Image (cartoon, rainbow, N blue to C red; front, side, top):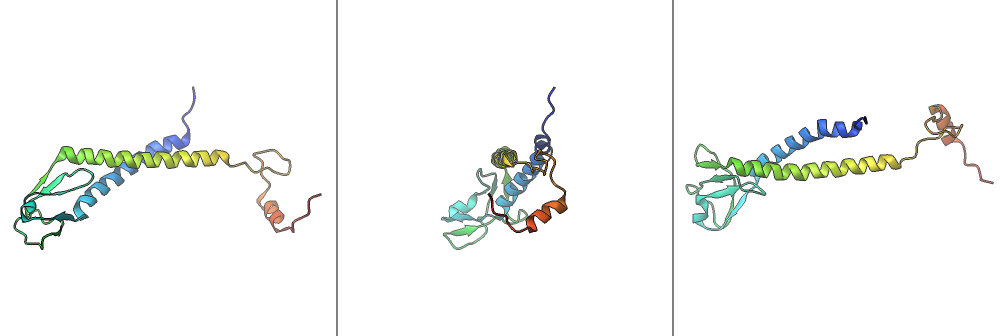
Length: 148
């Protein structure tokens, strides 16, 4: 029976929840903070917020912004809001998939880089037995000797 690699376990245990929380915060903050371009007065009846999918609609007809112009999500107490849960979940899954792919690519690159690193060799020449730290420091401080 093979044991799972520790980096894979750490990636699943910590990377997935962190990626999910990042995706959740990103999706919500993007909808709350990004302005939307409105060209006509009748477009204010249902202004859509959220990317890549629109999951929040707000009626901003009672406002009088200069047109064409940008509007942002306004107070739900003053302007009716519709939240579409299915579109929100799909939006969240899309962003999570992108973040998860980026995390996996970075993790794979780090593992590949780690495998390429040559272990230190001690004076005995055997890998895995590095010199004591003081002898490595002494070797760095010595002047370079010409090779024969």
